[in-house]
Image (cartoon, rainbow, N blue to C red):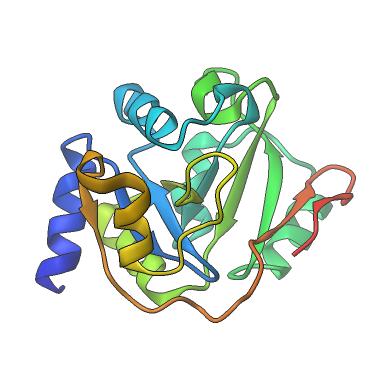
Length: 184
């Protein structure tokens, strides 16, 4: 593991908020089990907690602690889209923080196809929060310099790397209905 990846993981484990490359833009992330870190991320981004956040992971197993029940046929359709740029609104376990799921009873989740983001989740040992690195209403950052311009020293760490080459954020679909909520 690289020193930069080690540093990013240490930052996550200590309750920090990091920026890291994803399929299309830089993302902001933190430990989804740390409510103080989630609050810091929402404050940095100037985002309402009502909207909810996405969790990314390197595998379904890393997401399972956060997920409620889903019919087997629906689960198979989701797994066929992963790893990849489709986030699914999956029924969340009842005890999942409203800071993560917002005012919804679902949680947006994705198994990422981005090698560095997947390596980050693997090294961290679980899913991480993933939301675009931008202040609410501003364009998402595509470079470390753009991340720094928007967040400056308030951000704890930037894991530099290449974006995945996609132009648009991940598609979001409802796991029960299959309905597209946000197109990619």
